[in-house]
Amino acid sequence: MNSTIRNQFPSLQRTHQGKPLTFLDGPAGTQVPDKVIDAISNYYRMSNANLHGAFITTQETDEMMLATRDACAAFLNAPSQKNISFGHNMTSMNIKLSRAIGRYLQAGDEILITQLDHESNRGPWLRLAELGIIIKEIAITENGKLDYEDFKEKISTKTKLVAMGMASNYTGTVNDVAFARKITHNYGAWLLLDAVHYAPHFSIDVQAIGCDFLLCSAYKFYGPHIGVLYSKTGLLDMLDTDRLRTAYQHAPYKIETGTLNHAALAGVKASIEFMASTGEGDKLRDKLIRALAGIEAHERELAKELYEFLNGSEKYELVGPSFNGKRAPTLSFYSTDYSADELCRKLAAENICAWSGHFYAIRASERLGMQEKGGVTRMGLSIYSSQEDINQTIDVLKSI
Ligand SMILES: Cc1ncc(COP(=O)(O)O)c(C=O)c1O
Image 1 (cartoon, rainbow, N blue to C red):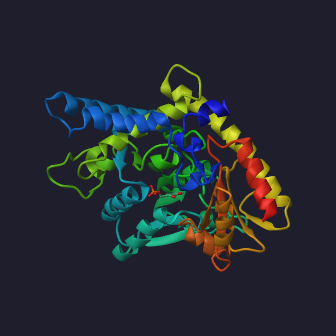
Image 2 (cartoon, protein in one colour):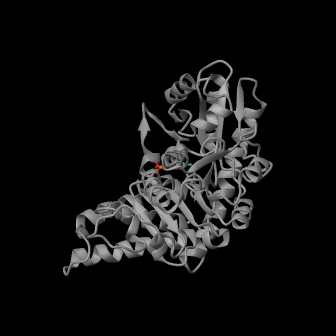
Image 3 (spheres, rainbow, N blue to C red):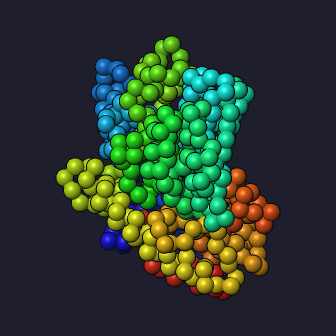
């Protein structure tokens, strides 16, 4: 199964200085399979047009856009394509949403964010302080988990929104979203989830979670650079978004501005179909659930092996939770001998692609004391990761 999957990725076939590359940079963006590349180039070859016209290419574009919204609805188990909006990336969609929510709230209302989140789910909300909205942050524990006692203490009837991640792109922590939904319901607050790091690794059911908003980004799940927003039926229609009077004034279009990246959207549909093709079932949703269960198990096994090596090594210190419970296959660590940047350069010399720094989860990096250490090195497993990748990485880490 692994070689069938790997053969679909052209970049996995390339070499650099005579040797293949080991891609452990998935948390910053995964590699892209042929199906997605073909969908994008076929759109440009055959169907490139703007929307809602009388001729064939515009009609094909309309159909493709609806089909992509449907595929995203199946991916997230949204009730319909009307719950799915698109934008450049998660950050810009969250900025637009925060501006609209800011207009809806009143001075003195509160928003809860977390110390663990990527800055894209903190900065836009922190900005609302200029409207008199009070922003509080849920603390994190030493091993990079949310402090749920602090969560309970900070939420109140004044809280109108809790904006938190489903999984951390820094520590791999998977957050307790069921707890968050229960407590936000009790206080009547909206729950907004950043699923950017969660979506490539686990299946998502927005209706079962009961969240109000959820954002993800297709370039983290084998697709192009597109942000996807799920909004619960009726919510987007209530909000005063930034838009032109010539644009549609209702969901899902109400938060979309200008002409979208049509070709990339053709690629988003193909990326969801690519993941689904690794699972069995009649309907796209059934295939996706099985496919993601397989992806989760595959990535977890490899990540656990790497984790155990790092945990047992005297040269490296892991940051983040253990593998006892559910966690993302993303490992951050530092070396006792080299800075994170130096380590990444040494890995790059052996064709191992890994990132160093704070990965925009800068608040977590500060709180965990990693900023003063020069950041961490991060390695993430993806559907195409192989046992050879892990063997090679462990060998190189041992030799450094
Ligand atoms: C957890 C998480 N949230 C949000 C983002 C921002 O996504 P985008 O690049 O689509 O704005 C990232 C990107 O790395 C991320 O890892």
